[in-house]
Amino acid sequence: EDEKRKYIKGKKLGEGTYAIVFLGRLRSDPSSLVAIKKIKVQKEYREGMAPDAVRELKHLQELHHPNIISLLSVFSSKDQNLNLVLEYLPLGDLEMLIKDTERIRYGAADIKAWMGMLCRAVWFCHENFVLHRDIKPNNLLIAADGEVKLADFGLARSFADPLQVMTSQVITRWYRPPELLFGARHYSGAVDVWSVGCVFAELIIRHPFMPSDTEVQQVSVICHAVGTPREDNWPGVSKLPAYTVPDDGEPPRGRDYFMGFFSTVGPDGVDLLMKTLVLDPNKRITARDMLRHPWWHAQPKPTRKEYLPRKD
Ligand code: ADP
Image 1 (spheres, rainbow, N blue to C red):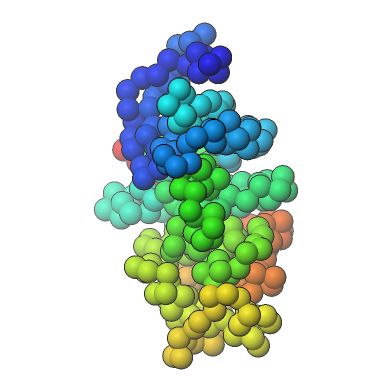
Image 2: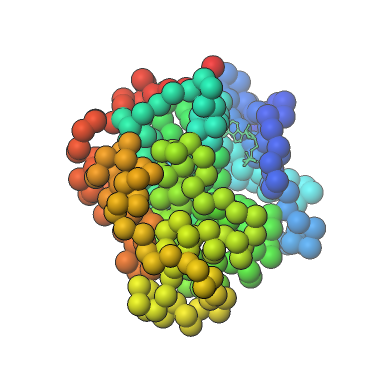
């Protein structure tokens, strides 16, 4: 196909659950590097699906923002696999920085800079009626100039794993909001905001805030860490298809509890964190209001991107 011929495929860069990623070059300008991500489309999904998928992904190509990875092209290869041509971002992701506690030190100003970039990315997606649906540190890639870029839109994953659409298995479990765990069929930008809150907490404590091994356990972890969804704090929650909560869940946690774990970002930072982790999605802060929060103007100022910590 035409789009495909624009690129020269190079060495394999890495492999994930749903894709293999190759280095690529622009045929017309071989000094310009790209990443070619070949989605492993499931067999039963292949027949005739790739053209639809390509069409659906085309609208992501229109999403241009400094904190969103550029989708340069989409094409399907002869084996009906989906190929995404993406901006090449060789400096790893936020998960690598969070985990490398031996070598990487960072503080409140750095967290504020990274969170600012994440929140602007999410705001821009929602403003354009796109839900990301898989926000987590491993999907926040780092550009050579220090800019953090939201990558790996859940949409691409839903093509690789068609069953997830039916089971609302979007979003990696630890970052999944209670409404999805309870099987809500209609969900909103609030699902991404919850994930942003989980990333925020993880940046501060430098390990996942609410890890679990199963979906049932995930509900229980949320009920202990954040509070228990009940009719009084979330009207209608008990009507959701998969609603069940443990008997010993906590009432929604207050400011003092959050200050105990997350005080490094100060009272304003903790206030923003709490508003992203509100159980009722209708009461959760929106991406737009996150950007209007006083924390951004409180001390310290966010680190300039060129001075942010980086690997190697
Ligand atoms: P995972 O989500 O498990 O990291 P991916 O399929 O998204 O899996 O990516 C696999 C690997 O390919 C990544 O770990 C990374 O090393 C590399 N990679 C992915 N996207 C890019 C990119 N845009 N630029 C450079 N390397 C990338």
